[in-house]
Image (cartoon, rainbow, N blue to C red; front, side, top):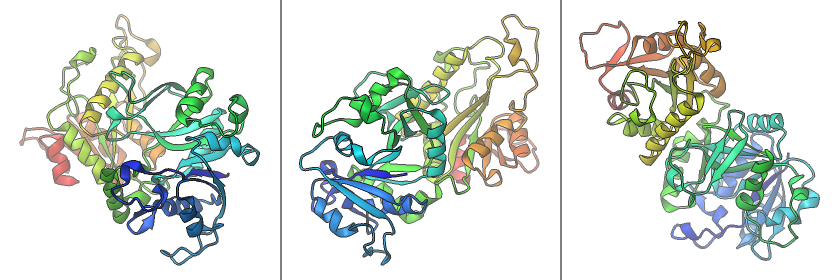
Length: 432
């Protein structure tokens, strides 16, 4: 699959770091951003690369050449085949694609040139092909969703709406466009833009695909960050040096902190039916933020029998979870995934949903949700934690092979090998 990298940015927001080279050539931990991208692609056999260059583009061409140049950093060949398209004038984030129409005859990867990433591209490509859409974009949670564009999709990944940062929103799932895309060449036939026209990829290409159901997401917790501001630049540099960037690739085993919801993340009110009753517990945002920073995945696993009881609809539960993600995001924290069990084994109640009244494998104390998450995200359960405030959480964690943590102030409780912490923040400070 051909990879197109948009490497023509000027980098005005990060000029204080380095204004003498184009943005993709700013060195991070001694090596240009673009070199990290090319290395990550080459490791997975993606060696057919087309670079769109503009501002100070000669610096990029001199450094990489046709891909056979020797890297002055690693002293090895870049090991890829590189072509160039030079923008004589700025064409926006998609204008060059229409000038390259004859070269883009099959589905292709399209990447921003200012991001550091390490992604299992095989998973991404497989997901794209399974949807048969014209475009698939990678989405992920971040620690500043309140000033980011938010992508809203259904349970199958079909995009339903795209909220730009200036658009009003209340409760929303923390899912942000990561700047990594797979596009079909049919897009160039769908839109009647002229060669040389300045085009915005998000607003003029991707967002219009929503109406016809042709845009999908691939959601992943893998490492993808843009270095467009000085704060993010230094954060990413530290992540490179620590090895976190490579480790987050789902080809490698992950570690997770599985979190119960009620009584662990939010105030326990019995069966939570009303979104107005959802309230984060003190210290939870700080705890989740520290989980994020530790490299562990933060994954909620929660029994929600209110669905089977007919007291809360799926849409209402999703909105409650959107509130949870919004409140955490406002404090710079995020969840990598949420799993819930809608079942309940006991029947005979008015208004219940009979098909959900079943003795399932996902309801805690069974470990089904943890095992499903482990399959989805390549998680080493033996290196992970299950944290909750009840017997069901502990039993499920033990059954899955996790280290189980009971949240309780009662020092007299005897759970054998199970550790006890008074709060989620206390657990994080002690164990991570």
